[in-house]
Image 1: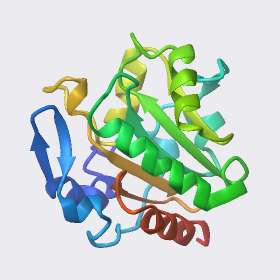
Image 2: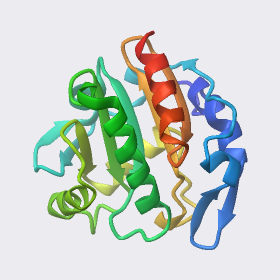
Image 3: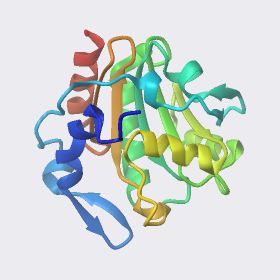
Length: 206
C-alpha cells in the first residue's frame, strides 16, 4: 500500500506547515484561520483504499461503518475534536455550524459532515449528542466515536495522527472530498465559512 505521503497529504502539507504550535494544541496563523491562505489544492485520492471501514457509533447511537455507511459515494467533510476541549474545538465547531447553514439541505442529502472524537474514553454517544445539541447542529452532521484504536486508524490514514503528542495536540484540519470523483483537499477548520463552502461546492461540481 502507498505510504501516507499520498496526494491527500501533499494537498494540505502547506496548511500544516503554516500552523504555529500553541501551548495546549495546534493553532493556525491568523491568515490561515481567516481563510486568507491559498485555496486548497484538489488532488485525486482513492478514499476506498485508505479510509478504514471500522465500526463507529454516532451521537444518535447508530452503529455504522465509517467508509461504507458515511463516506462512500458522498461529498464528505471530516474533522477531529473532543467534547472537553476548551481551545480550538469549540471555535472549529461553531465555524462549521456556519458552513452547514450555508450548505443548507444538501447536508444530509449528497453532503455529509463527520466529526470524529479523538477521546473515545470520554466521548460516549450521549456526550457527543449533548455536544451537538449545544451547537445546534442539524441532520447530516454525525459526531462519531468507537474503539480508540479504530479512531486512531482513521486519523492515521488521513495523515493527521502524531502518536508523539497527546490528544490536545490534534490538528485543526478539515479534510473534505468527493468520494464519487476521488477528489480531495483540506483546509483549516477555522477558515472563513464562505471560503470552505466555495471549495466544497467546487468539489461537488466535479
